[in-house]
Length: 428
Ligand code: GLU
Figure 1 (cartoon, rainbow, N blue to C red):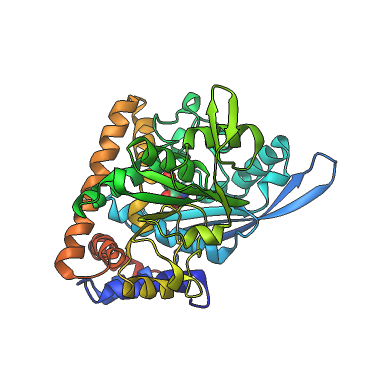
Figure 2 (cartoon, rainbow, N blue to C red; figure 1 turned 135 degrees about the horizontal axis):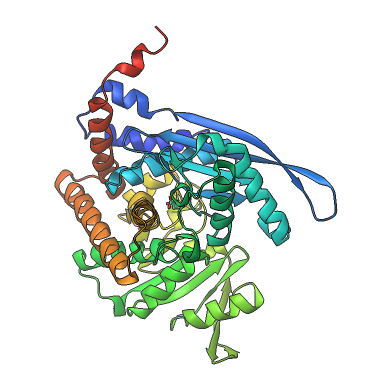
């Protein structure tokens, strides 16, 4: 593991460089984030006290279009993390051929410790602080870990108040009633589902004979577990931040989701209507879930879950990164040696930003699509990107991660070179 998350993320770039033919100038540009904004957000708390929160917005690169990326609320948010997440967004958008650069934002906060009104004041305060550097043609926000449609609605509303006009395209992942898109809430999982299905088909894997463990039971994790279970995959383990459950016969994901909504936390239950009974299961830790002897492992929580310290114990045959950055670069090498195929985050979880793009397009046109249209377009985008990566992976005999970076780098390199050298004369 490199000294910082961003340095670790950049190792993936280095690995791909030997397989692409782009100019040294373009490579040099891609090593550094374009702008990193750090702000202090004063919030009046419910008890009358004033609390200052630290917020960030990083635009890593905008050569291919306006910056694009989510906003994360988490106690561990740091500038290094936000820069890395913005780096990943840059490559993700290029890989999916979306007309966006990469950006990310975050606030260092435990959102579970705030009341709804405090959360709203914090979200509006964040927009107040970064309003000058975002916009539908400059940098577009979206949900990420512990942020959701409600928060996106407040953010869009606040930006519109500042600019004295309705600007829906500055934020995606909004509530439907405020210009959100059908299918956005489930898009990350639906996109991942298409990637998993496409790769499994290529490997001759049959869903009914495939066991799956999912780490993380948030917007992406719970939904991907459900979609896989619906299509016949046997989801044997799931976990949330407090720990996990394992049942060899497979888990009833809708029941577990229902239970979590009512009670917080997950429990191995089978529910009929509102009556839930506990079924036979083993309680496991998040760490144990990663070591299970399953066919497919889906890390869908936070970064750096599989590192050089535990990669040796991973037994899954295939890993699909639904979270951003769940595997460190040194763990990559260990997994590769063990012949574990890793399908990278910038492909697997790109469904979210893909439907964010659809939302932005709909906002600009003022004409809205049906859920069937959104899902059909999402499917096409995800399968095309997966096929592209697969083709590079199998023809160049490199890891799927490096193949994804090669594809993205070629697009970014073309755009950087096409833009010319004007920037190098600024200030002369
Ligand atoms: N937060 C999501 C991601 O990491 C979605 C970003 C977006 O829609 O802009 O890809």
